[in-house]
Length: 350
Image 1 (tube, rainbow, N blue to C red):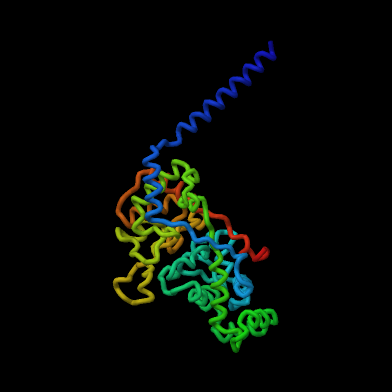
Image 2: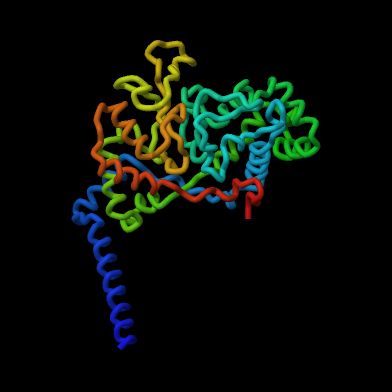
């Protein structure tokens, strides 16, 4: 009798599990085949897959340049007190950021803006929140010589330090044999920029864009649809961002949407043109799930809050909670694999 009761109990548990699983499946939205195709074509109309890159197919000369750039990216001797490197604020293990609202600099001085990711960013033309740099190569020297960041005293000191190191004497001579001197500002920028140009992170969304409609769930596809309808004017292209800057916020004031009240004038600091006040570069959304906190000052902590803040600040429209949830689900499909070749302890090439 006890065995019968025990067996019946097991059947009941199994039955309840089946019912529970069936209920979960039913809760996943159902869309028609036509709407499925509509979403797919909308996605490909406004966004595109990241380019393919096989770094192991590079030439020997290209590989040497990337190796040198990687070494410099992790080189603490590029900072005034020799205590931080590019990787300190742009941690590859954290998807190219440090997850701090504002990053501490060479002497623990706090920067003015949130550190942007270095992953995929070379696909932009202009760099930095205020678009002051035209390429990743140009951007390299900004943080190195910034008093709030790496605080190197100047180009002469930088070149002197690298020239005094036997490793760099040899490495630069091998990579730039026709230059005199081998170690100069342009070559430092070329090396670090070449390394950053290998930092691509393709994701499930790329597979979807290439035709695998099963790569995304129905909820994620509905998120794609809501995203395109509400966000495409700023967020498009392979980076799901834009190569231009926009006023932020258009509606209200910055402190209306966050706990920050600092009046950052954005691109105006570069151009001094009144129309550029509070104009900032539209950030890419690749790996956005991992690159919190958000906004130019890191004042918004969660992805869902960032979605709603952007909608209110730029469109004066409060998104329905379901749309926010679906968009967040889509944005998480943009999380790619960390480029392991870029980790300091790993070999760069096979």
